[in-house]
Image (tube, rainbow, N blue to C red; front, side, top):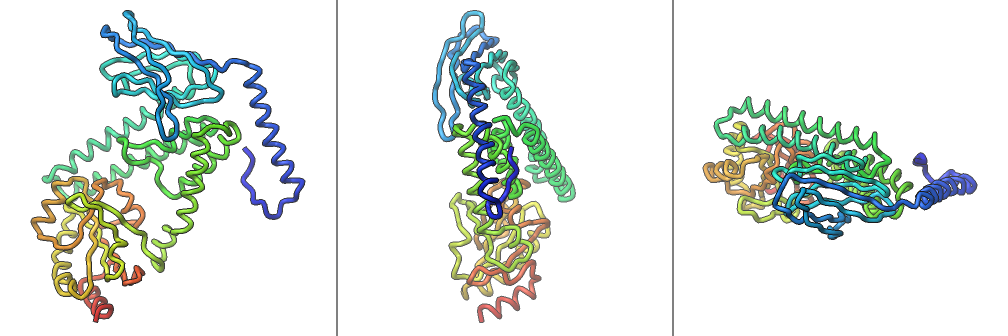
Length: 399
């Protein structure tokens, strides 16, 4: 991979040299592929069933899945597929709604052993480096998901003490960070493999991206640059390069990190569902003085703070004051019960994904309760104000 350098300051000859190097590398790869003449792949699989079901082979494109072939399992539990490709591509073996992901390269002869009872997870693949790498990625993600689900189960129990909740949340963060380190390490070790794209977009429980921090954009750029040299016609590589550029532009334009550090710019927008499932945007309250309040039904200081806010809300609401409250809950029933029990009158939203809430990450929430007071221009004019400080500030802004 060529080092990333700026165009300004380079001579015409050096630019010409860089382009020539890339051209020569690309031509060399194409010549090597054409010389081998082996663009065909083969999949031979076995499954422990006598039912003789249909097995399907799909190609996974960037935004759609295309049925490539289908066969019926024979009486010995065997099935096979053959095809022709020019560069590594993503496929999946499908049994009903159960999937086995594959990354197939030209010339590979793949053997697959799977089980009908646990088709998606209990399988072995050989003869395909990319497919074996994807298996490794999914195996680690399943392990992490299991640990996080166990923690969530305890957090969902209303009898769990606050001290235990805090300890479990910290443990969940540690587990999640271990998964991040594994994924980043995998990508850096396999920059030349299309499996690194799979790792970049991998999710936990099919919901939350493992790599979702602003600094991960640089990893996307590095991976995209490397794979673009090797597989410039791949739609997945083109999509990765485009995503990296788009995300980098968004982060630069919004400036999340600087905003949270200095608190002297416009606040990031929030768009989350309320307890009725209706999405409410923070930006819809532009003409009001707004207090963004982060809380959780399981956090006792948050409950006490809400009681203080009710007095402030009743005093200033008619004058143009609104509270936009974000719950860092993961149990919908507990969240709604707390709203109803304390008769909270203001806007209350949540994505019910704590401790993996993206909004909490963006706003750098380290403890609860946490508040940001916005003026009518959406400038931050106060953070974590006491009841007296908030009352005085609202008098200044509204009276």
